[in-house]
Length: 359
Length: 207
Image (tube, rainbow over all chains, first blue to last red; front, side, top):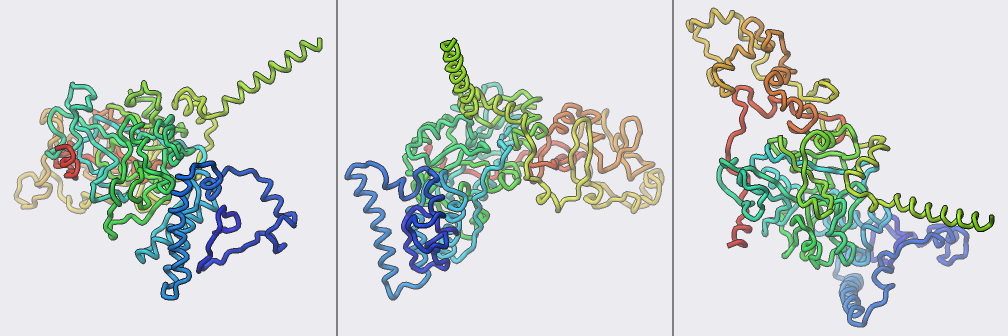
């Protein structure tokens, strides 16, 4: 963890890694020696502490922010001064403090990304005693993820939905699911109003076909446009992701999405400890909290590592095809170039990277 | 003269500004255009499927323009090689006096009886190989060559990657299931069954 480029004041209650106050050898924080100049001359976007406080705001907002921070601060101070509180709770208080003041993930440097991931892993360890692994892997160059769905092959088994829920630690209580499989009548067109996405009878049913929807990772995503705090954005490899810690839960994106791709946590997500997928990514399946948005990320924790998303892996029919749109030899490119493909609501100009095709 | 140079200069700068806008990603008209332009400079990635496919025995095949991996088959067939049991010729087994009853559970539900029987694909004189319609031997590992005799469209789609499940990784090298990994060749259709889950919360919400 590198502490020398933090943008907020650290408590340093009891952390194992004591902070280096100076990044150069001169021993002073002032701009006395030359090595400081370099740091200062770099122009950086406002982030973290600055992003919160270095803005004009009215009294009410200022008080709100101050109260929230003071509460955490008070908690931190009370634990740090307390004789009874153990080392663990002091460390936890410090982590909570740092997490409160961290910036938007989108603007973080790689060191800052690693630092927040380390804090989240440690925090989980302190709370549950269990170890998780969390990645902050960035988008790879020359990769643009795309998806194709064969509507004549899907049998409506919904194995993908189960795999998705388990992989992405979705709330079991509200039975949240990113994927929906619509049972459609043959010959009635793509009529979502009359399709059933919650059937329970033997499938495939006579005279029906099945069509799966999820987040389409639009290249021109309307959900990103409307986010008032820029907590959701399109990554370089085409994934539309959410910083769950920056999201304020206004649900504008949910309203803006023409495909019903986004889900909201109305209550604190509940996943039994033994079912938690511990292979996580900051932008993917890490545990969410109450009041934030989430959605399909094409299993960023898997896809960026080279694995197929969980739904592709689980599908017993091979209806789901996933790959790199920039690789001219990829299977997804072959599908786009050789099959008759279409997308939903193409006229909206959202440019989804999710194509449907038939045999 | 000076005016001309000035005008030229200004128009040059304007042109530069216009062209430099093109670098911005929002300027692609559609995602297909972006794919077309950006994939011209595709150099490959560091991501490979290697670490995910180590546990599967694979063989590399080349069909047309496509070269990819499929799971090796022979080691997965429990009673291979056939000659370990079939020490006598089929003629001798036919009268039933030997008392051996193998393969009794196999019933062909694949095309109709006029088109297919055991001998369409199996060769009584060379049981360790399959045979094509014209009696040439086909290795069990390459059984897709047998299926492709009739299912030509599926074969084309499979080679390209539109049919058949891709295993483990989206990254190259590609590993795809071969026909018999998903379809029982004696009964190739998919069974009907109940979906894996039913969302009771959806049901309550929509009442």
